[in-house]
Amino acid sequence: MIKKILIANRGEIALRIMKACKSLNIQTVAVYSEADQESDFVNYADESYLIGPPPVNESYLDVDKIIEVAKSANVDAIHPGYGFLSENSTFAKLCDANNMIFIGPSSHLIEQMGDKVSSRKLMEDAGVPIIPGSKDAILNTEDLLKEARSVGYPLMLKASAGGGGIGMQIVQKEEELEKAFTNNSKRANQFFGDGSMFIEKLLVNARHIEIQLLGDHHGNVIHLYERECSIQRRNQKVIEEAPSTFISEETRELMGKTAVKAAKQIGYTNAGTIEFLVDEDENFYFLEMNTRVQVEHGITEEVTHIDIVKEQIKIANNQTLTVSQSDVKLKGHAIEGRIYAEDPVTSFPSPGEITLYTEPTGGHIRIDSGISGPTKITHFYDPMISKLIVKGKDRKEAIELFQKALDAYDITGIKTNIPMLKTIAHNEAFIQGQTPTNFIEKNKTDLTKSIQEELK
Figure 1 (cartoon, rainbow, N blue to C red):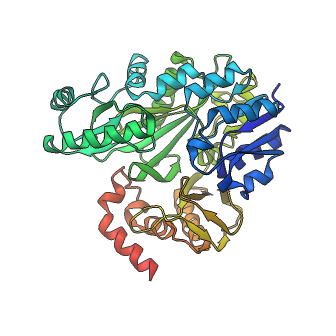
Figure 2: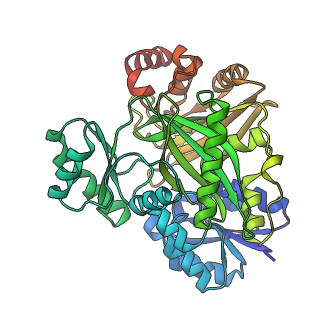
Figure 3: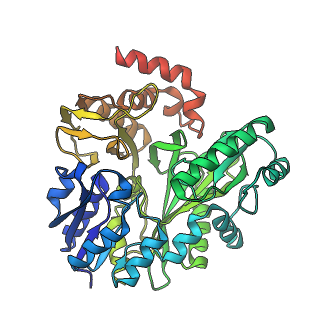
């Protein structure tokens, strides 16, 4: 029985997990860097331990220090959250070796699904449609050119072990390919220790739609329907919605059944997400699988009333799923906007001191945040401040609530992306649901002009 959990993360997701633990009467242990010693999650935990200086490789990625704290604190399990060590198979193995439950799938599955090439092969074997692309990892330009000519242009170059948009680039023609390969391979090696790449055919005007899954250790797997995450900048999500207004009910059911079948075939347990690209004719293709809780899990919770983090803990505790597929019903529409410390025009990080922080409030508003007042946003970590989630009876009402909530934010001392989110929320194409993955690029001129007017 799990009685004490160490959260190997920081900020809003650490707080989110701790709150779920407290509701289950489970004690919590926080680990933190010197940069986070005054953070809310450190004070909220039952126990907190300093593990190192601000750089992530000396603190939140230091597996030996985290395991050492977990052993000394006598924890039963470790929840990795998202990012950092959440998809690190070595860390999951270390947890197992030290008789601590890793709250997530097996290290073997993390390893298989974390590699883009092997995950494509697994999904293809499970009957999931795959985007045309290279069959094996590419390590040299000779193989690169051969594969690219076979797949055709435009194409998407990707890091085999990548994530978060790192090591990804659209290549329109052969003259751009070698330089893109060299730059992205080098970057992938720096971030993931693996510079191998692969290529996929670029789907024009595609949608990014993902299926949330839960699987227990007793063979039960269900889906919690979909989230649409098409509005992105630099291949990273900015606004997410649940459910998608693009796909038909028939496609929704087929995507859910396909994802569940694939998860069962690979023996998946705990929370996971299969991400798809969906073309203009609603044909869907496997993109990747995330073997962890997603940043945007909250919108699924709002429309299904299922607490995904609690389910993760219960599954790790060897309990059967508390709901069956027939119990999962969609109700209403939820939208999430990620509030970042960044320049709203360039979208580059803009860390600094928040001198005033006021969140919007209301019955239809949920804020997942790691801060509650003035604080410092450092350059050491992701610049996300909070996640704004609103729920309406339908998409029209959700958009109106989203617009009003953005207006009610008051953050001073730093630049944020709120002006950009406001501009998108009032954009006619967004309101009409015309939101392919190239939405920001496609509407860049109008969006930039509106942002600049918002800043006046």
